Length: 280
Image 1: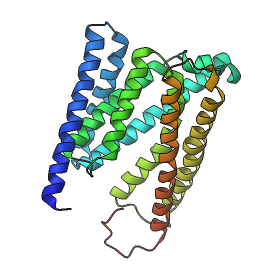
Image 2: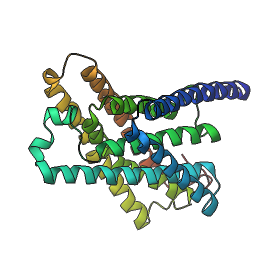
Image 3: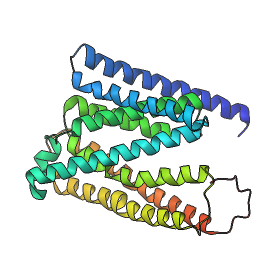
């Protein structure tokens, strides 16, 4: 594809996703100010927190936009996965394992701190969308990462507005435990640590695969199974079809991620013959 055409496609994508992000910001602002939804201020707090982290890394560590963005993403995955573990362990200690996953609890209930955690997460997605648009950290005619963030912002924010399926969404975020190691690998390679025989890299890959299987693959399959099992318990409406569509999409992406992860693993095991600065 000619560079001029690529530039035009990138400009159009930037215009579209910037406009949708602005509409989302206006929507949240309207809910907070005019509908007195002060609980949504955690969205603002999340956006400010990750933007502050961006500035700290930029001024103290590196000014490379991709390195800064990846480092903040690593922070986000760490914060989110820690929050999810805390929420789940806390609820388990209060209600027990069986009651915790009752259909009504998952769809209509809200575990302590679950709402705030989702708000904080939306703040991150808004921050990250803006950062990628600002530094053009995306590629393609329809950038998949920008589409991913936009869809999650819409789905998560609608759930926050309606106070529904909050706990289900928390369960889907268990996958952030694996995302931590995806970002660690990327930051590690940017830092020049690429020796596949080193103990650090070997341990990282072991943890990467363990988390991929248990925190991402199996957890999302179990959530999908729970949705299928409880299909008759959902009210007639769009909640169940949307939830099934979302989980089908996640499982589909997980399969592709597994293939990409395997290819990256095999490539990293091979002796480096190319330019050591090259990255996949």
